[in-house]
Length: 318
Image 1 (cartoon, helix red, strand yellow):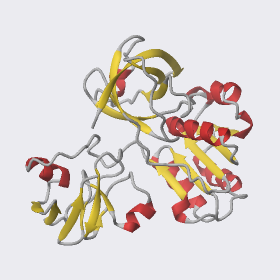
Image 2 (image 1 turned 90 degrees about the vertical axis):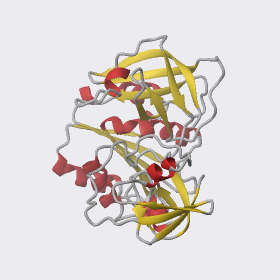
Image 3 (image 1 turned 180 degrees about the horizontal axis):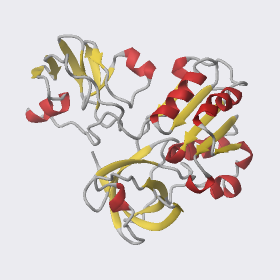
Image 4 (image 1 turned 60 degrees about the horizontal axis):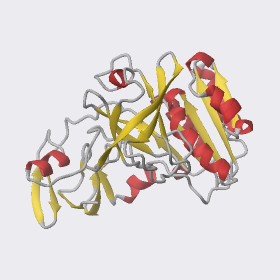
């Protein structure tokens, strides 16, 4: 995967544990356009790679903006980035999008909790500029723990479309969500990002009103570990070569062991970098980067975590 250097042009403290970083290309060129909701890989000072959503307007190409939450049990990613200062250089990837805006929707509802607001901001910019019908609902434990509030209230241009829900008890969330979803139609789409339990509640509420595949989820951390006790070996075929994937080894690992290079970053099934095409066979999907409709199609697989329900998978590199 191609990486390129950027310079940190600005660092802002959005909350006590969230900083935003405005990035410019080190060579002075503008960035390439990117679809709203996209994320990038960022290589921090400790060489740890993490994925962060772009939260700047996708049509303004002089800067990329990402926000980083300092995780209490950081393994060197967020902690190192929180020490980055203006003028330092980082490496980033080109943007990738796993939660694209459905351009044929009659109404878009963006539902975020905590740091999950970041991809929603770029989507809101896009929808506002396109003159589409949308609302952004932002949940946080308190005003002090919510990032980008001043931007959304005073400087975004779409403040009338933003609804804040601060300090709401978890038990009260379903009622608020049901009210927000009341005007949706079968042609509407819902997009959500935040903690797993929150996204589950959003998905459950939305699916009562709109088709399941109209609910789009952006994961930023791996879910509960998959039970692997019943795993069995299987074969993969790539470019007419057949390899066995034993228990305890991933498709990516087996391919790399045999000299087949596969782009991969997170190794947890959340970033989508390692997605390959499935020509034959039935995947055992264990990722959190593909939508339910994409998984039902069975024509792609996240090769870093998923396995096979059939004896052999015939795969193609994207």
